[in-house]
Image 1: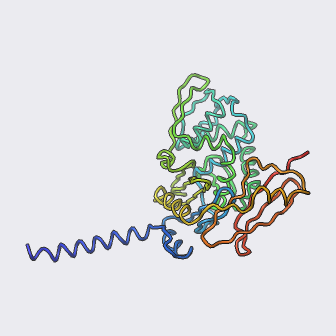
Image 2: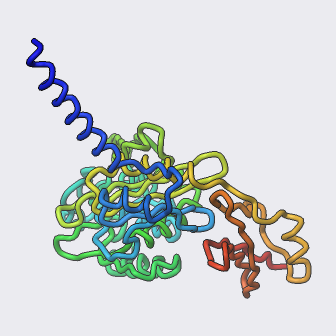
Image 3: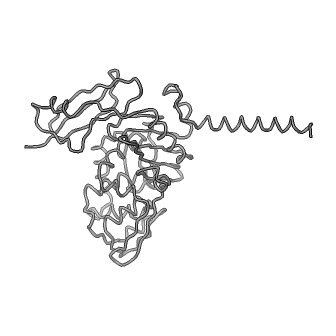
Length: 351
């Protein structure tokens, strides 16, 4: 027995060392280290990643965030918000032969089904229905190309400078969409301002009876939404793109979006990035309503009903702001040490 103890002790030491090494590689706690040190710890988990404050679009963490990559089904975020801005939710769609072109994940639509835009959008976002994507696209002029034009127009409007879209589903065997983690974070930040979009992507389970009588049941594929950790998001996967994921998280008066492209351990990584962001940044009110009214007194009226002036900052950061008056509103730019970190736009009220 005495001869076995040294061997057992050695095995335990080696096992402990290996376990400690594994956990230390995945840790994102910032224990007094620089942003570069944090990046070096967590970057290997994804080929591209970003954490963005959804209010101001301040980047809180980034790794190869502007590398152009295949998005897979997170493309459907753009498909959904495009539909919400151009279609009516209660409009009915008759499913045509275009559905036969669909492959992969589906809500199992059949030719002749009559279904509302609303139900199609739930199937699109919760079940990642590629058949829903193609039916929604064909609803515009019975021409998928016209819808793809609108998708790219929407992307340019949002500021997605490094993105191009060739299909509404994210499938990449015939045509390819290209985007970046940064652009997808901008897109999700924009889309979540739409209350209907926010409701759809935050739904865990949905059921409906389409006009032709068929009952449909949709369960959200996003594991962190099902667990209650995330407030919204979208999953994606193809053999070429690998796993892609978008998640939104909220804590007090602070909401972030996390995007990863080609990340095999994405559920864990998104949780860890959210923990890092909420522990490293605190919401700070950069100016008061009184200061805002005083600064804009002679420039007209602005819609501040759903606007606040909060920006996430780290300890010891001093944030300042600059006002830029535009034809249709006001851009408030936040700076730390003369570096632009984010902004918000306030619409002007026409009188």
